[in-house]
Length: 110
Image (cartoon, rainbow, N blue to C red; front, side, top):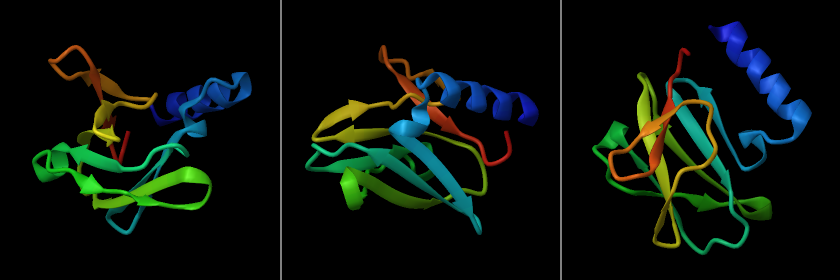
C-alpha cells in the first residue's frame, strides 16, 4: 500500500495536479505539522477529530503558507476554516463528512 501511495504521489507531481502545491503534511516525533498555501487568507484554522473538532489557529508563514502542529499518534479526520468558510484541500485520503463536503484523513502509517 505504501508503494502505491508513493507512486501515486509521483504521478501526481508529474502531471501538476497534486495537492502538494497547496497542502502537505510533515510528521515528526509524534506530532504532525499541516501546511496550507492560502496567500490571500486573513485567518486559517484547523478542525480535527483528534481534538474533538475544536478549531486550532494556524500561523501565517512565508508566501502565505499557513501551518499548525498537532499530536498525531493515530489517524484523524480534518478540514480547515479559511476566513470563516469550511475548506477541504485536495488530499490523498478523504471521506464524505455527512454535510455534502469531505474531510481529509491523516494516517501516520498509510
